[in-house]
Image (spheres, rainbow, N blue to C red):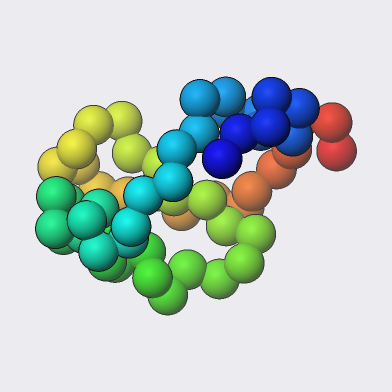
Length: 58
């Protein structure tokens, strides 16, 4: 849930991970990601790119 203060992306929703994996099986690849890493990709079907998570105010 978004509290309109601490959610930098806004419009957050709560979803079951099982439903996400059913819609896009490549999300399961991200289960072993270490903390402080984010996964990005320009479009569905393209490979995930992992990089250190940074915050704009850090």
